[in-house]
Length: 149
Image (cartoon, rainbow, N blue to C red):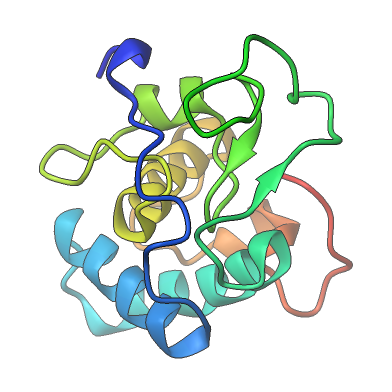
C-alpha cells in the first residue's frame, strides 16, 4: 500500500485493554490466514507481550519522543513518522507491510498488529508459524527485558 494511503483516523475510538487486544490479535491472525492452533498460540502470546509493552494494549498511543518522531504534522496532530497504535508501527512500515483486507487506519488494532507481524517476519526472520518469535523479537518475549523492535 502506498504510504500516502495510510489513514490517521480513528485514534482512540477502538476498544482498549487486554481482552480487546486478544480479540484483535486473533483477528489479525485470521486476516493473515494462520489457522494452526500451535502457531496461533506463539503469535498470540508474543503479541500480547509486545502490545502490552509498546502501548499498554491501547490503540491511541503515539510516541512523540523517539527517533521516528519527525516530519510534518499529520491530521492526528503528531509528526508524520511517529510510531502509532498498539504495536507502535511507523507509517512507512505500516504501509509496506499492510495486510490486504484490513483497515488502512494505522490506529485500527487488527491492521496495526497484522502489519507488525508481517514486518517481524521479514525484518527479523520470524517463521510464519511464530515458533521463533520470542527468540527473534525480545519485545515479544515475556522473559526478556523490554526493548524496542
